[in-house]
Image (cartoon, rainbow, N blue to C red):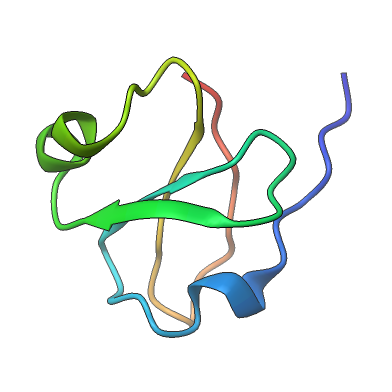
Length: 65
């Protein structure tokens, strides 16, 4: 299945190496946290798409858990 890539403008103001939770359609960032454990306390990770914000010199690869 091909997933739509996130709009990287949505994560411009999020620190590199933080974790973000996107809505299923990648239309909004629901939450962000420094660790995956912290993020899982903010949202139910089964209902969102989780991605780690990499430094700008690296590529972004969305991951569905």
